[in-house]
Length: 295
Image: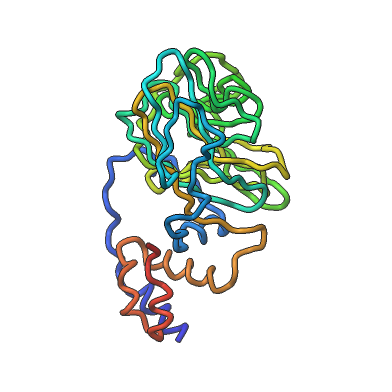
C-alpha cells in the first residue's frame, strides 16, 4: 500500500500554485512539525469558552456581544481601551483567530497577549497592549512590536535561526531591534495587514508569533513568563472598532502522534491544489476520509 501511495503522490503532476498579490508569503518562515500538525487539524467547534472575551476584564468603553465572541468599542475621545479573553493558558501551543476589519482600526490598533495585571483603560491615545511589562502587542497600522511601553522594531523583520532546548526555530528580528523607540515611528514602509490574523502562543517555549494570509511570520516575542496565565488581548482607540475572537486549536508539550505526522506528510505531498482528491488515493475509505481537509 505504501509503495502504491508513493507512486500516486509523486507520479501525479501537482497543479501550479495559486497566484497571490499578498506580500506575506515571501516573508513566511518554516513551521515546526508541532505547529504544522495543529494547522492541519480540525478547528475547535464554535461556542468554546476559549473563544470568549471577558466581561470582567475589559474597558468600560468596550461592549461584548451576548455570545462573547465579538467586542465593539464605543465612540469615546481621548481614551485607549483594551479587552482580554476570558480564559488564559500557561502551557502548550495555542492558536487564536482574530478578525478586525482594516477600515475600522484607526491608529494604535494592537493585538497580542497579556497577563492578568495588564491595564485595560488609559487616558489619551496609546498602544495599551504592549504599553507595560505585562503585555506584548503588534500594532497593525505601523507593524511595530510593543512591550514595556516601547517599540521594539517592525514585524516581520529579518530572519535569524535560533536554538532553544535542542529545537531549532526561526525568529523574526525587528528591523530596529538595536534602536528602541518611544513613538509610533515607521523606519520602513509598513505592510497592510488583512482582516484575519492568527496568534501563535507557545507557552512552553515562551514565544509569540503571528500568521497572516496563511503564512507564519516567525517569532515576534520570546522570553515570555513561564507558569503564568497569558490571555489574547486587543486595544483600540477607534469608535466602532469590532474584533472577533475564535480559539482554533492547541497541543500540549508532548510530540505529535505518528498518525498525525503521517497525515501531515501525505497532505503536504498532495499540495494545496489536490487537497480534495483523497478519494483517488490507493487507500481504504476510512483513511481517505481521515486525510480530508479540516473545516
